[in-house]
Length: 139
Image (cartoon, rainbow, N blue to C red; front, side):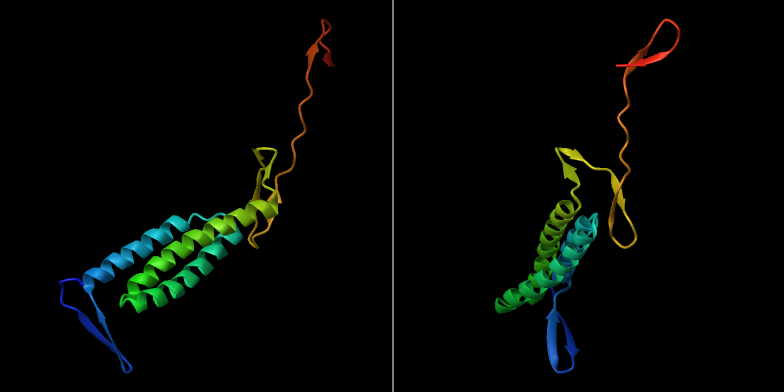
């Protein structure tokens, strides 16, 4: 238990003791995890981050509550859930959109509805040479 004096908050008939230092550490941990996940690129990665954070917070809160540290458990669960959800969603984005073909990344963009649009394929430039009359000859 932290040595700081707890702050008692009464909500309806439930009293919760909050420790200021514990809240500060928990909040910093949560913000760090969310800031790392905010770089999610595709729609599935973003959705996975949010759903993972919600599910992780719920499970972490339940597990943490059994040891008397529900807030810490929820914060840690939210951070880990967001990271895991982002990784799974990003993987799904890459599979659905076929962004990696034969080891090369396909160029394109996501529109406002989250749909992937591949960039138009560039034609391969034909090679050749100029003859002595100045005409270009293709191989």
